[in-house]
Image 1 (cartoon, helix red, strand yellow):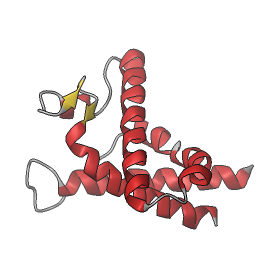
Image 2 (cartoon, one colour):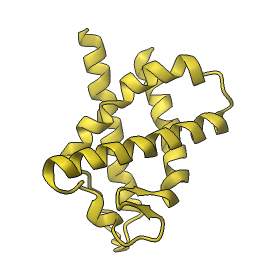
Image 3 (tube, helix red, strand yellow):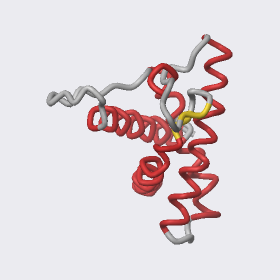
Image 4 (cartoon, helix red, strand yellow):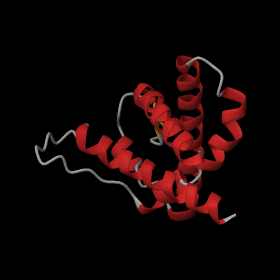
Length: 135
């Protein structure tokens, strides 16, 4: 059981690190220092990547990479919406809500449809990390 916990925590770290890089590179402030950020809540959310891939890999692992990327991205965005709604109910606002508010492709200020390609690419990175971690 401890092995699964360690793998879960490691993949959560990969997720948070990827988010920090993503926010640094795509910052609207164009800061050359490349300051990135995440939220403490995200560690818990990214920790769900490992059990998610444990469930999905046997089903989707043989699919062509574009299909896997699209399916993963769609699932991530649904999960982003659900966790955002849960956080909004629990604490009044999802941490990323203020960043998404007023954006053209934002849905309920919780999901940005224009981020679909980034999530598709990121999901393949997460999948690769999962395969390395899972052995």
